[in-house]
Image 1: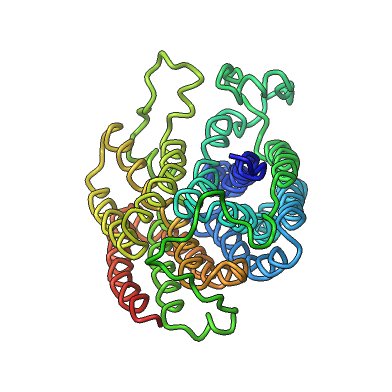
Image 2: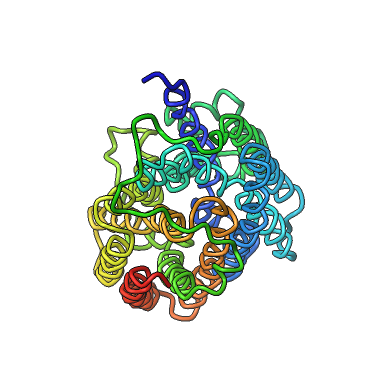
Length: 441
């Protein structure tokens, strides 16, 4: 291996993982639901709007962010994302009041979602350009951190989000570090959600900017040493965004993304209180794990398998093809939601969290690789941004509808069944995607 670029391209994947790990903490939103509802008396739909605003802003900002990174490269665009994400948490901690939930929607939702949108597309675009020989697998790795990011929030958050001690004294930096490592218990009190927002905002900004420094594009025309495109697969045409907007294939990809992501987000936005209700005070982790057991909780399990699902389904799609892998994934997800209605034990909660996370995570490996396969890499940033608006629509519909259904019924059966039906509808879309792709539409 004489090409020095072959030896160093793994650093781009490392940078991608760091950036995505921090951006993915958005999936830990459910840990903030109980503290916010307890302090301000908000109902479930009110809190879920913050999650929806974040996901919608994430998806919408990806379009201009994708165009910008296509022009100036991934590094500076991802750094903008890190700065905005960190700022959103700090502003939220300073400004949110009970009579003004819209401030949370603007800070955590709009500003934070915009930060994720600026950062998210950059690692994917850079990594895929460096690894055309392993496109599905490397996309899965590049976004695995996004799926698993919630794990690194849920463990510490279970202690740090507790109110401070009655006397007002808070935890010191050393105690916070021990809690974060799973070696401390916070002495039955924490730092409160406002201080947690400030701490998390600072960590987000520093880590995303550091990871962004490792992102770069390969030289024009570069390809891995000893690799040539398969002779039976012609290079995809390089579509511009105008052509993508008029493509039936792109429209069907977009529709499948809306249906599949809405299904998952109906549950993920309230996973922590939902599974807490199911478990009735029981814990997944055995007592001998001590503080480390906080990482083995439903949101943490979902986060781990969310990350693994991106690698798993990315690899499956390399072995089969994108539409077949999508259809298998959506069928498995629909079945998972139909079976969730009967879950009542810690072991069942573990399996449900793992199964839902594994399949939901696959969306974020399969849809970008399908976009690259069908519409080329030259304008990948903006083209995938357009497809990704389907996730933004799902981000508005899923959490809010899930919250409204819970407020109206006081239980989770109806959201589970509805989510399962949506997953099955997404699987049907994949049949049409296969046919449109075969015809070249």
